[in-house]
Image (cartoon, rainbow, N blue to C red; front, side, top):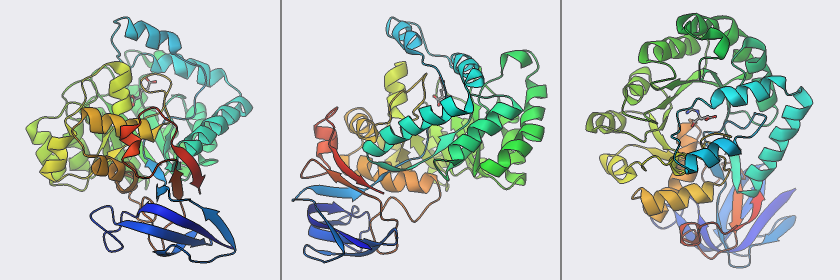
Length: 380
Ligand code: NIG
């Protein structure tokens, strides 16, 4: 079966060889997909077995959300409410979600995750990374990753998310567990390893130990860094060859310079800064320095309970100094780079047939009409 998405008013391909500018924009276009891949991008009117009429709307690559924590139970609305009344965010609520997740059955967790994936798809996201990090013991971390691997190939072992209560005062013992039996149980279900490098979570040496162990087990590397204050996360990520360092809310000139001279993507999570009342990072400075940037939702019950990449794009444009074109590219091609993928985040012959049809004439509406559900159809 072949499928054509026809009568596209404005197509964002992210392939400059196919159209105008860095977004490779083609007007009055159609895209043919076969066997899950784009086979041709051409003028309107191409034919195929099945036809979807875009009716002059904008079509872009499905969003690539490279940072989520979708497998969890419970909710922390009370924590959010208290925060809006002035209580600061410190990550301590991770233990609350860990308690709820540990006691949830497989069936309950599977069903919660499936509902969230349905929400992710209707928000236009076609590739999603999912982390563990709310099990924090061998069995529950492995269980969460097994469930995550039922919904995505982009799974990340985040045993070093926060010290569980039972290891209070014994952080190094916990790191031994993470790098030993936990990694052994989780690696078969994971593509990536990650750690939360922050005061109150894990320090630079502990995170380096985790990354080294993950690399030795054949996993790709990523890191949470510079979320709640300045710290060593970005430099450690660059030095370790991480695919991405995520948050990057507090960056020194040296951090920006290190990112610019590296293959490590700076992934911004602006919905987190929104929900935790942190300042927004100056993405302009990072883009101008020449670093690769991505936008992701960080969907989790504590610091960012949203699956909306459109919301992240609007924040990045309004509050982080990115142009709309840059933000849309960071939410598609940038996310793909953060996952070291070349088959998603673009619409070009050979790429995955992941397309989003907007209820809008151009991608500019994603920032121009914040909060409006503009995703008409997600093709995945
Ligand atoms: O990326 N920073 C660490 N982990 C999550 C927060 C998780 C939570 O508060 O439950 C984050 O923001």
